[in-house]
Length: 182
Image (cartoon, rainbow, N blue to C red; front, side, top):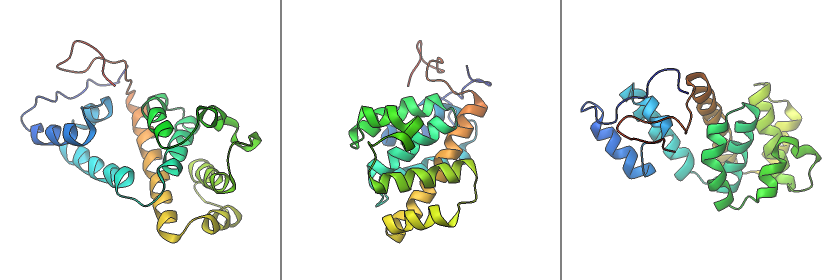
């Protein structure tokens, strides 16, 4: 259950932003219903995450691989629930999703995916990435994709930390609805 009430998407001050969120995301997800308490934060968040998810050259499979791993590492079930269908659509198998908690013991990930996962783990857990881990991911990806991977890992650590600190839960009822929404 969320720690504070979700913002009302019918608020006239944020209505244009709500309309944009609906155009870009299909609906006002719980995350955005919480972010709408601050129009400037919600606006910046939407723009940044749109760039990460829809405007980068980083392959979608690698993007979703790290998002799912971050959700696991940070204990962020909302993030995992939201991204599992996207990960499958981007080419991850259910077996890979299931193996993420113990990916180092799995043979389901190729060398590039292993380098990306090691980089994700290091950025998420230790912040300071050892040279050997960075070198492996640098060999696997061109500079643009490496920058985008790094930004994606940073962004989704931000997302999961926000979700968990605020207690965002897809089962919570949203203002203006009689039921929970995803």
